[in-house]
Amino acid sequence: MTKEELINRTKHFAYRCVNLAVSLPNTPLGNHVRGQLIRCSTSVAANYRAVCIAQSKNSFISKLSIVIEECDESTFWLEFIVDMNLKKVELVNSLIQESKELTAIFMKSRKTARNIKSQS
Image 1 (tube, rainbow, N blue to C red):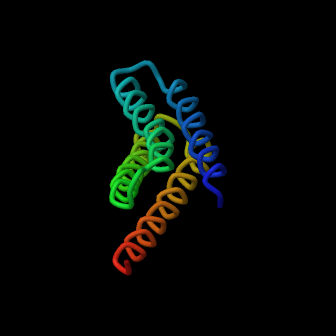
Image 2 (cartoon, rainbow, N blue to C red):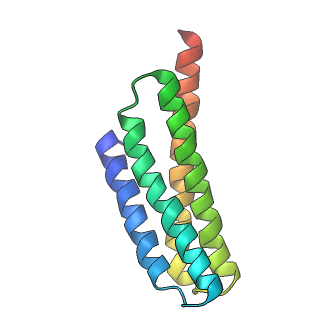
């Protein structure tokens, strides 16, 4: 997958999460989860763009670690939405799957970058 494809994929992930978040109930819990999911899912997309312009291998790895954390946090909030019956599992499953796939992609990229770094 190219850098541009991942930029678009993370942006699309953020859009989908925001659309889900704004549809959550207007309750104290719904409002809290809405803000958390919007924050972390958009952070995945924004921080991946920062990864793409990192100026050193150390910066690349550091920024990629942030993307991994935010992606995993997105998974948590998506699972929480289902666990708390804020939305039906059928509406959230594809986003959970996408967040797990993105996390795996970024973890593999970080591992590869670390291996390349240690070989130099």
